[in-house]
Image 1 (spheres, rainbow, N blue to C red):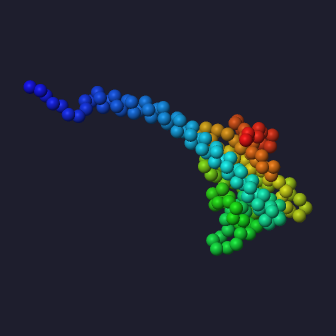
Image 2 (cartoon, rainbow, N blue to C red):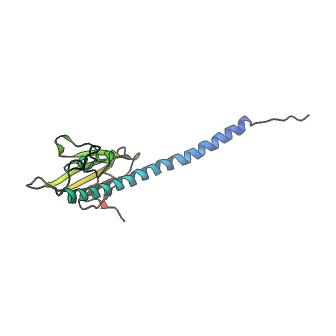
Image 3 (tube, rainbow, N blue to C red):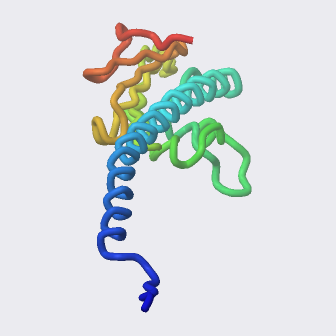
Length: 172
């Protein structure tokens, strides 16, 4: 008499589960590296956007560079852009203006913290320079590189510590 069995044996199911676990063990580190690369590309793109927004702000309002990153943010709905709400950056990247409207400004986007600092204030209270640093929120998890840019629009990077004006420029 023939015995017909349908389905899978326990051994066959265990082999399939083991194969799936091996594939996952190979794929997950690659997925994490891809996420880091995407965060770093987003950080560089955000720095380029900030540089472009600062130049646009300077030429539009003729008041020098912004006091805070928040000044580049969107105006209240239905209102015209102003020197303190220029509408050149989104809410996320523009962050929140610091108390008193001057000084360092911080925002976070795509696994990076962006710190904006105006520099070179003249006698008329205009800022003739600025710099922005982009540091990973969680080193080796959200990013591995540190970035820096200033009014020269050159983006620089460092792989070990916060990037500065003397760090290596990005190629390209």
